Image 1 (cartoon, rainbow, N blue to C red):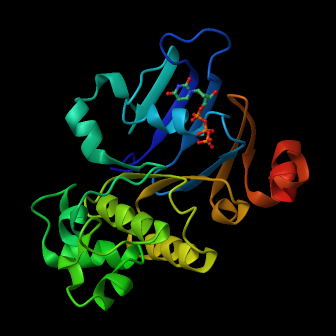
Image 2 (image 1 turned 90 degrees about the horizontal axis):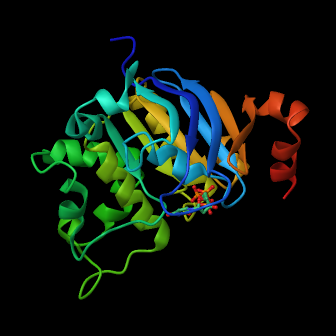
Amino acid sequence: PEMKGRIDFENVYFTYEGTSGEPVLKNISFTCHAGETVGIIGSTGSGKSSLVGLIPRFYDTLAGTVKVNGVDVKEIDPQLLREKIALVPQQTVLFTGTVLDNIKIGKEDATMAEIEQAAKMSEAHGFVSSFADGYNTILGQGGVNFSGGQKQRVSIARALVRKPEILILDDCTSAVDVATESRIKEALKTYAADLTCLLIAQRITSVMDADKIIVLDNGEIVGVGKHETLMRTCRVYQEICQS
Ligand code: DUT
């Protein structure tokens, strides 16, 4: 049970099929302990999305091993693996339908209490409740047009309602203001303390308070540590901070 939510990358190389040249990820090794929040930061194209896509096996490694709970992901039943992991993609994918349907799509048997709890953690409950139809508000065509940040908050609720062991947020709070984002992180810490979180971000403020931050540059890890340490030791991290 103490392994629940642990992630290990061991000398991982990855490249997209049909592409030539340097691999997209090179010799990636790190451990994410159960319950930790780990930030991943790096310039565009540095390989952040590719790295997290290896965990639910959207892709497989070229070499090296990715482990979840100490087991090679290739040895885990794919459906079971995807039940453990919720990945919120960079591009939110909401469909025309009610807010309720959009949140429930990850877990059709979710109760209203579970849906509200997930939406409270993702800071969606407040604005959803403010609509006359609440959770029955229709999104998109013929309904209400949500802002980019509101859509992102609904997508996070969708991930949380599944009660995953591992939550991966791929730059999906980019349109959420800093104060709201920090309330989401606080809620996750409080109500989902044993959840392992991987946070990809462009903004340093999104990952600053993570247990550990992985700095990617051109497919390689160039720094791992806490904000203060990286500020002292990692040139790439300092540059991101200044930009
Ligand atoms: N790449 C492909 N095919 C894909 C996706 C990405 O060849 O389907 C390449 C583009 C890039 C590298 O892989 O050279 C890493 O891309 P990734 O999307 O992993 O980088 P990122 O750090 O997540 O970039 P961003 O911050 O722009 O999302």
